[in-house]
Length: 220
Image 1 (cartoon, rainbow, N blue to C red):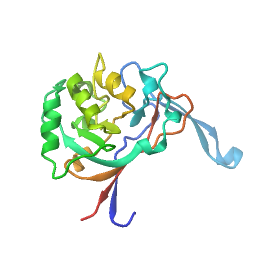
Image 2: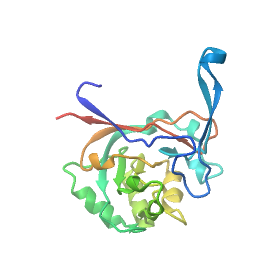
Image 3: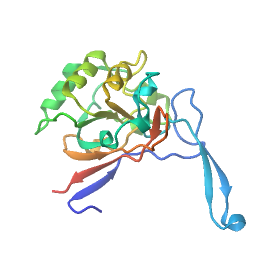
């Protein structure tokens, strides 16, 4: 508990061999390494793709020469944030600049440079089903608008903020805008102002890493 704030968990669990993953990615695997009975303490070895469950992408994901996770300052992963509602759009809908702009105009405040913008689609509830991959995605014009807003990060409660040819990844990551995927509980944050924390593991050379993302929501 942090006085004056409610801590809301925005992360999906990672369970060995039972975690929804992007098509073609292997399931995470947990293996016992030591036990209390044999060694005096418990520990496990985990094997997983960097882009498993709730995670954040680095520019290196789509740019050979782009910075990796460990090369980006930690402050890029923490900031004031809000969430907008995109749960009313249809499957595989391409979200436009106008749709982002219209939803931002509904807010009782204005987002500023360096904020984090999260997008509630409702697709975290579909994880593990075929419908999960029919999520909406950002169009090129929406991505360029987000660059103009100078947000530091965006996040979605879906396996990706886009689909091939991946305009969000190709436009936002080179601008240093972090991308969070597979967030949860964003319905509780729509229209609110809060502090977002999504610190990555400092994996040297990584294109992404799982995170335990949380929102610090001011209490009324």
